[in-house]
Image (tube, rainbow, N blue to C red; front, side, top):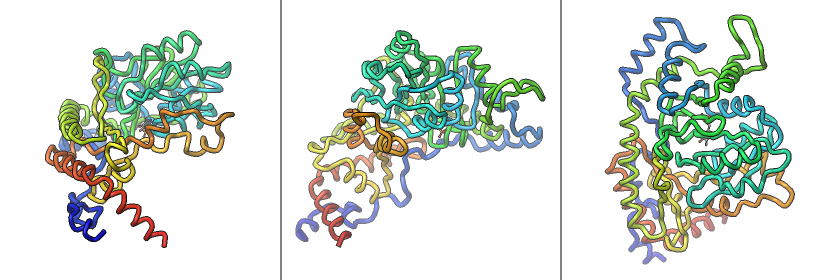
Length: 408
Ligand SMILES: *Cc1c(COP(=O)(O)O)cnc(C)c1O
């Protein structure tokens, strides 16, 4: 064993120095022009207009609607509240079909509204809802489908619209990842009854915290607007039950500043994606899938699938070895919503039947990208991955020994 260690490379997992002095994160915020942001904040303070659909929020809503190609954008305090208000505005009741392979907010938003998320399996290539399986899960209690454009890859929009139409269901899209993505040349945003965006700090375009509901339905947009502002019309007339889902002016200032740099963020995301593709292509057992020919995504996530047998080590061991190098790869969306509470403790009769989701949850890792990640960083991370896969069995053996030591 000691002889083996001596011939091993200087990987940090074996005790070498980490390749990166500072951690490389997935989702380090993309930040636009600071001077432009400060100027906007000065304007906000000068005007003493901090919230309640001030000029910054109005401008942000107009710009987002134009980019998403929709009639209405209602800016929100975050994407989760956008999902909740969206579900309520659609009068959803009973069961709503949703993927389990998503960020837990997708399911939580429904459950928080007293709805029952019914988890549906996904297509192993796109990682998005499988429309045939959606149809098989429809019951008399089903009122809607909440599909996700996971990783910014458009869901099977046309097929899902057909399923919703056939069964008289409402259809909403969690487009938290998909601002700036396109399907068949059309921007993501105008499908189903409504779509929601997240502008959280970690998303491709951020307002620090923020989100939006977008729709082409005039009456629905009106209902969403009422609900996000306590049901107020005018100064003291309340016509509906509402909540506070408003975006503030500071966040809108950040959003407008981010939008000015959106082309640059996109260019960097695409450049980094191509660089990662070149690295991953030469590493056995690692694979990056791309959307179909009619798809263009914002590439805000670098999604790599690890085939354990070909790579010689598991996704989990690879992620452990990367973390030792200060490359903070993430196991999104492990372990799947259905393995999280409260869903884990209340499975449907017969249990969850999600084989594709289960398999993907052991395979997928997400690697650092965004404007905080350079081509040199990617080349270095590519070298590390190559070295790790080249020494897969040794790394796995070393980690098992370490686990055993820690147990005794
Ligand atoms: C980030 C995210 C959300 C929630 O958005 P917040 O703005 O963080 O509330 C919802 N769904 C998905 C898929 C997400 O990734």
